Length: 79
Image 1 (cartoon, rainbow, N blue to C red):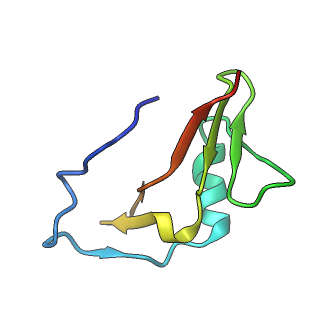
Image 2 (image 1 turned 135 degrees about the vertical axis):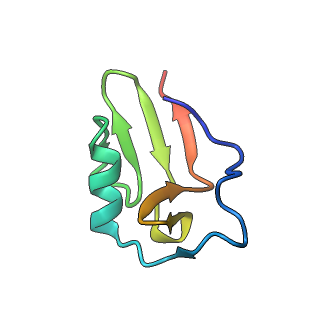
C-alpha cells in the first residue's frame, strides 16, 4: 500500500473525467481487501491491515485514460 501525494501523470493535458459512481468505487477498494463500513457511507476498512479509508465519494476520484485514481482520501490506522 502507498499514499500518493502527487500525481504527475495527471496534468491539465491528460483527459480526465468524473463519471465515477459508488459501485465502481466500492469495487475498486474491495479489490485489495477493503470492506465497506455499513454504518458510514464512503468509508472502508481493511481488517488485516487495520486501515480505514474515508471520504471515498465520487468527488474524490477521477478517471484518466480509463484508470480510476483516488484523490484527497482520508487514510487512518485503526488502533
